[in-house]
Image: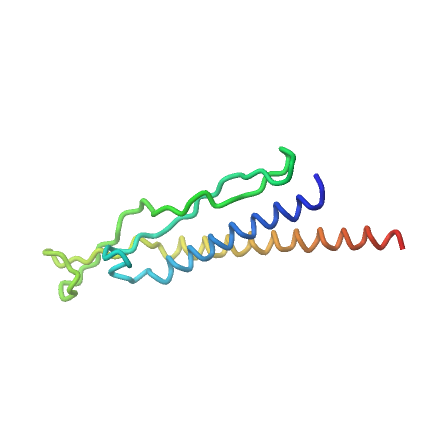
Amino acid sequence: MSMLNVFKIAGSALNAQSVRMNTTASNMANVDSVVGPDGESYKAKQVVFAAKPVGGTADSIGVQVKEVVDSAAPMRMVYEPANPAANADGYVEMPNVNVVEEMTNMISASRSYQANAEVMNTARTLIQRTLSIGQ
């Protein structure tokens, strides 16, 4: 595997984790939103990753965001009879965002991003040291 492929693999992971962090931030921002942009309750989003070959060889596999899907978790029902969005029983359908899961996702994505940035820095340092050997 060439050093260029190391940068491609780590770069693909950086992009994927960036999408994951942005999706998690969007979920956290909408945790108490009664109505989403489509007039329905906001549904938490989840990022689906897939392997992606990078470079010309089969041994260089990066990551890509395959899709961002709505979470299958049930919506939260909160009893607020005075809320205009309440149903006949007085319950308001709230987003299915789990704050604990989202914070865990954010920490995991942040650490993955950090680790891949460190891989790129280490590869850069190795290339610089290799080039300085010939001097």
